[in-house]
Length: 325
Image 1 (cartoon, rainbow, N blue to C red):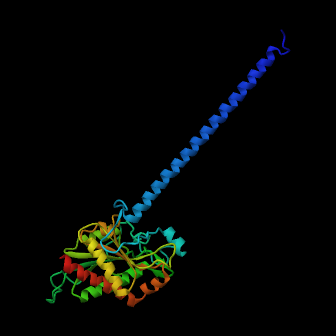
Image 2 (image 1 turned 90 degrees about the vertical axis):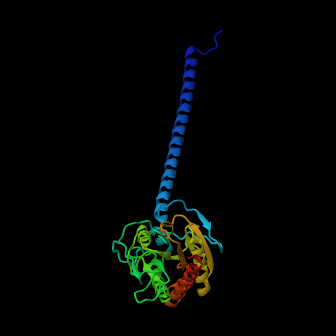
Image 3 (image 1 turned 60 degrees about the vertical axis):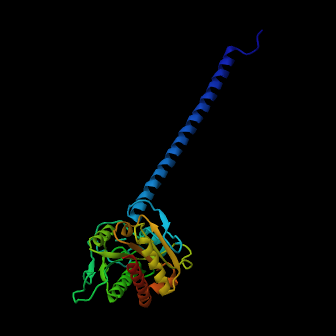
């Protein structure tokens, strides 16, 4: 029986169905291709992020390992990430990290920026020994031993800052006051720098390790945060998990806070700070206060307060050397 539809009708209908199937398959292929490209781009971005984070961690922590933090004996440390890049410092304080500092080509979390360590092993050693060997000062006076002092940052590396108050200058002022205080008590002193000079972090560890009979190493720094600036303040210390380090760090924080009345933020072990992990004697990096806190910054910029901090550190060294050696 004739249906009224010829073979050409069915051919056209079959062809239309094939075209629809083709378009569906084409849309599916395009969707899968776009999805693959999107996943590939996301994977590349993630890998670049990990790479960038690894590079930043290398420059912040000196590339010495993980950022494992563990409490030292005593007061619990209120952990604050105080290491900044120049870009972060610009965001925090509105000017470049090297603003107002001469670029003498000769350091910069603790990097940051950086508020803390910069793992640059370039730069000439500017260290000098104030005093003589631990036996005598040349006049027959008995010396108590050799202490190494490191004024953090310096030269082209200003560290953190608040307005015109630069960390490198506060560090140096406290370090020099500590040198004078220790010498007055009968210690010999070795300084990694005594002026506005750049010294690489690896170089600081190397030149201190090269000195004979160093009883303790103290690296002087200042802290900063990017939020709640005027609510966060106080003294804290970082050290390496090595014999004597935990005790020294806690004594430094306790004595400085006792003398100054500052908030005791405690001490902790951290593995990626060059000046504490690469030195061989009991070592501590002390954050004397927060420059990001306006009130504490004003104190830290005061000569009288700097001398109080120096006295507290010296008291800690007295206690530590008497009990440890």
